[in-house]
Image (cartoon, rainbow, N blue to C red; front, side):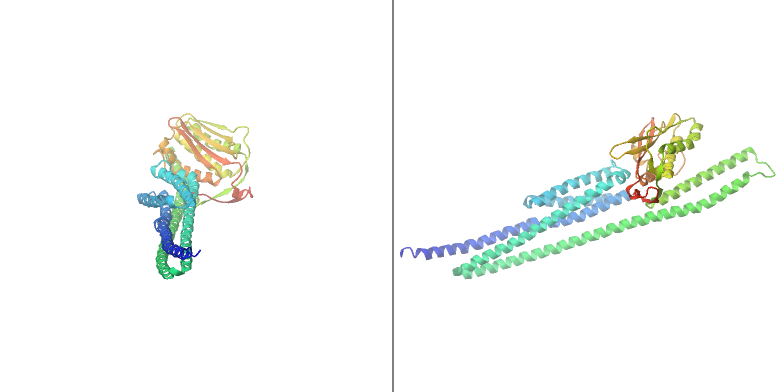
Length: 486
């Protein structure tokens, strides 16, 4: 036993000396690894996430401004924001393998959502997707994609912050374990104290780095808030310009109706019997003048009603009605015009059409506009008015007007429902008929669709639900204003 006693202290000293070497070295190594992860992975990833949030907001703002104004600078702003956003994503991808599994999953989901978003945006810029189609069919889905992308970015940020907090906790645990072990090594107290001081300085340096990273992140968030305020300002300015244009059209329309009505009155006085009979030529001139005045008044009425609809609300009155009656009444209104041009006008009411709850006057306006265009642009053949019932999900009624006119080329169809747009130089009107009819269709909870073939004719179909939109379903015979997104 006595021979073995010296070995124990020697062994203890050797172990203590070994621990004095191993423990500080191991502690520093662990902290350095955590610091490297923080500085080379987490901090760049957090900065990239902040950049990504800002560039997404700028990209969406530029895209929506392009949809509204169609200005090249918005296309350039969109492209520049996308490049910066891609750079931020590339930064995240470069450190992806060092991130937590939850961050990797959120990053993959975000990339997929942004790819879909970018594909549709490129389609709009490239012309494959029209702005009208985008507003009618894709806007809501694209908004959901944008929210999903923001949620993915927020999830990545949360996971990165959690990883950052975990690293700080690891610093603390490593520091405490090393301090306790070194404290137990009484023989190496001085060395342990020096090591603790060194570790404390290193921790303070890391703490300053973390504080700087937090300050930079706050700056990024401030820039994001400024970007959002700028987006809200632009939206407000757009609404102001739209309202101003609508007020101008309404004011100008009312100012023009008074002198036109007065002119019609004087022309009517000229046609009354006087001491001297008017010649047939004079009568013809007065009739033509009155017809021109009436056309101008009708055009002003359409402009005024379109201006009211342009503000986002259309007055509708829902009531039970028979679609066959509307088809017959509207067809009879335009039968004389069709026969005057030598056209055959047919009305197919069908036998199994269900009752419809909708606005009789608005449906008549839509069908009247379609029939007027069909008579105007059909030189020979026939015009067919009818309806069909489909059951794809909820049952819908399609009321259509089909002609054998010249048809519409594929490249011109996206422009057919744009306001102040006429596809030919022939004919009369301001080019707002189909745009207004499309607004009315959406106000009734339906849609207006076009099928056409050049040289063989066109078919416009008004699709309506059998019941009114949900917001007025509790008051079927009530009247109210229905908001319509343009």
